[in-house]
Amino acid sequence: MLDLNGALERFAGKLALENILAAAVTLLVCLLAARLLLRLAGRLLLRTKLEERIRRYVLLLVKLLLYTLTAVFTGVSLGVNMTSLVALLSVGSLGVTLAAEDILGNVAGGLVILSSHPFAIGDYIESDGVSGTVEEISLNHTKLITPDGLVALLPNKALAASRVTNYTALGRRRIAWKMSAPYGVPTETVKAACYRAVERTEHILPDPAPAVYLTAFEDSGVAFTVYCWAAAGDFWATQFALAENLRECFAQAGVEIPYRRLDVQVRQDQR
Image 1 (tube, one colour):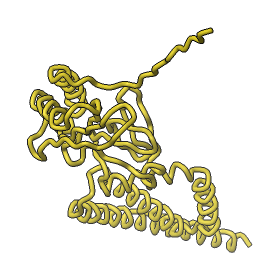
Image 2 (cartoon, helix red, strand yellow):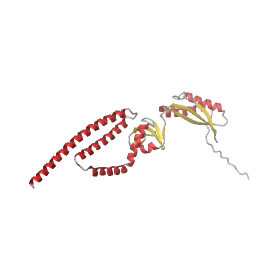
Image 3 (cartoon, one colour):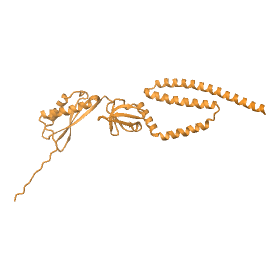
Image 4 (cartoon, one colour):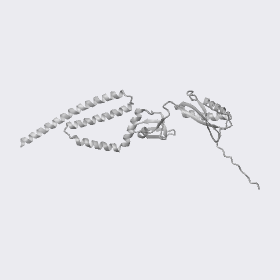
């Protein structure tokens, strides 16, 4: 009986030693294979047009997957029953996925934005009524600096699925400034005053050429619209300078800018 127990203990020790050696070899092989696969994935990603930030995230996901497989293969070599562990990991990953649905959606939206390039850092954009200059693009959100100096964080999930207007992608923006003149003033006089204001305004681009059109007949006067272009970085300053020059040129041309008036007549009954 003692000999049988001793044989069983020696067999168990031998089996454990063999499992440990097999696990060590499996771990070494898996680590070498993971390193080679990571290098191969890195070279393949370098040939793509993806940004460096996206390449880092993809490599991180590949690295996590390879190390997870390494842990599973090593556990199998040790004789550990991985069925329960895999089932537990599946349930756990499902719970994490449901709990972090919005976060994962933002991450997916961030990858879409970084890969499709609808805008870049420094662009002035507008989405869902929020406009500002792009300060940062992360996987979770996009940071905007609004014209009044506020910081707006837009979730990438909503931003990737909504309409985005990029005002600086083409490098220039159109100015459309509306002016009014009395009905009694000739059209050519008003247009000449508008063109003089355009000539006095700096940073207006010559191409496309500025234009002035009669655009509407209103209650208080005739509406004219001045169309011109400026570089994206000079848009606001050029627009405000044009408004000031229009007011001065209208005054010099003797064109009064009409405004709403209310005429009140007082009637006195005569008895």
